[in-house]
Length: 68
Image (cartoon, rainbow, N blue to C red; front, side, top):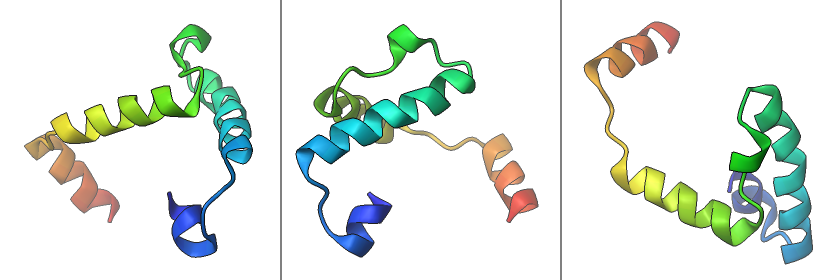
């Protein structure tokens, strides 16, 4: 999203490639490979669902204040 805000839209094929490349990072951070979305539309549905239900706790606010 950040890239697209600065540089403009990515072609669909590059979005898929980027998702696959980030899959390497995700598994390095212990996300099971079978849990990583297979395609951009699946990832977008997951992302939108998570954002819609996100709740920030007092503990998270405290950590953010310490970091920022």
